[in-house]
Amino acid sequence: MIRPRIPHRSFCLLALGLLLAAVSGLAHGFRITALDPAGEISWADAPDPGVCTVEVASTVDGYWTATKNAFNTGPAGSTRLFAAKSKNRFHRVSAVALTPDPVGFTNLIHSYGLLETIVGSGVGRTDNISYWIPSYEGGPATSAALSRPHFAMADKAGNIYIADKNSHSILRVGTNGLIHTFAGTHEGGFDGEGPAAATNLMLNFPNGLWVRADGTVYVLDTDNGRVRRVDTNGIMTTLFNATGDGSAISGGRGIWVADDESFAYFCAGTKIRSWTPSDGVKTVASGFQELGTVMPDPAGGLLVCDRAAGQASRVTLDGVITILAGNGQASGGGDGAVATATRLAGLRSAWPVPTGGYLLMTHDASQLWYLDAAGYVHLMLNGAGGTTHAGDGTWFYAPTELRMSEGRSVSLDHDGNIILCESDYGYIRRIRFLPISATD
Image (tube, rainbow, N blue to C red; front, side):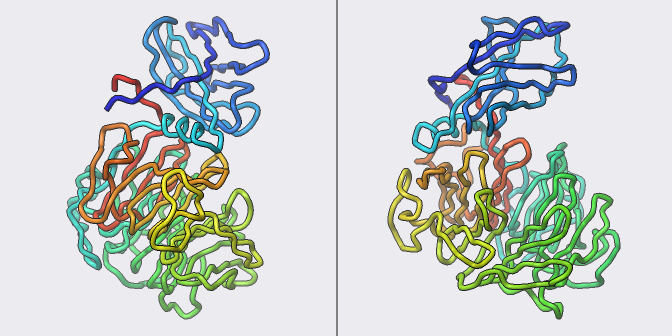
C-alpha cells in the first residue's frame, strides 16, 4: 500500500562515521544535541507532544530509511538506536507535532506503519473450549490456536503475555516469535496458592493481566477469585484473595497492580475495587453496568471502560465519575466528532497515549479509536463482527476497509507499538510504531 509522506516535517541531521563528524540544525530550534557511543541519540526543542523519527542513509542525498520512533513529551528527548556504531552512515531526526486536532491526528497515524498478526491462527472460535494442544509449545506463535484471549501486554524486553481465558493459561510470546505456556496447566481448576512453578499451578478462566517492565506478571484468576503474581523466575503465588472465600469474581476483567505491590485495582462486574496489604479489598466506585479494563489515568484518578454502557470514564478515588467518551446510545457522533456524543458500542479497553489522548477498543463495533486531548474521537482501525481479519502487511490506516473483529483489549508496548487483542477469532495483532516509506 502506498502511504503518502507527511508534509511540514522538521529535520535535523548528523553524520556518523568513526566518530561524530557534524551536528547541524537551527541555531535556536529543533536540533540533535548528542549521540553517545552506546547509541543514545538526543534532541532538543522538538514539538511537545510530538513524535521524533530517527532516519538513516549511506549518503546525505541518498534514500533515508526510518529506523526508530519515539514520543516526545517535554522540551528534550532521546532514544536508543539499534545500530548506532555503523560506519559511514548519516542519521537525521524528523519531528511532527501531535496537536489535539485533525492535523495532529494525521501526524499520529502517519507515525505508525504496518499492521501484522503476531499470534494466533484463527482456528478456535467457540466459547468455553480450549484449543491448546501440546504441539504448540515452543512453536511459531502464528500457528497456535488461541482460546478467547482477553488481554495482551508486553514487558520492556518486548515479550508479549496473553490472558488466554478458555485455555486457562497465560501464554508468553518471545521476541523470536515462539509461544510458550507462562502460567497455568491448560486445565481449569484450583490446586494451591503457591509458591510453585507457574506452569504447575492451575488457573481458572484468567480474564485479565498486568505486566511490569521487568516481566513480573499479575493475573486476574477470575473463577478462582484471586490475583496471582508470577515473578521473573516463573514462580507463582497468590497476591491476594479478591472475594474472601475463593468464589469467582463476578464479571472480573480489568486488573492493575502498583510496581511495589502497595495497592491494586480490579473490576468486578459493576464495581471498581481496590486492595492494599493493610486494608484488604474495598469498593472504590459502583453503579457501572459491565466493566472492562482499569488503570491509573495520567490525568488523575482511574481510567475505566464500561462495555454495556459503551463509555470510557475517569473515576476519582472518592467515586466521582467523569465520562470521557461514549454517549451510551444506539447512534450518534462518529469519526471526528465529540467523543461524549459518539456511539462506542461495547467499549472494553482504553490505554493512555503520551499525547494526552487515549486509544479505545470496542468489542461490538470491532473498532479502534483515538480520543485526542481536546475530546474528539478519530477512527483508526475499522472492523465488524464475524470472520473479519484483513490488512496484514500493509499500512494499517484504511478506515473504509473492515480489518478486525471482536476487540477485547488495546495496549502500547514500551517501544510505542500498538498491541490489539481480537478475542472471538483468537488473534493478537500489532501496529508498528514506525512510518513506512512511500514505496513500501
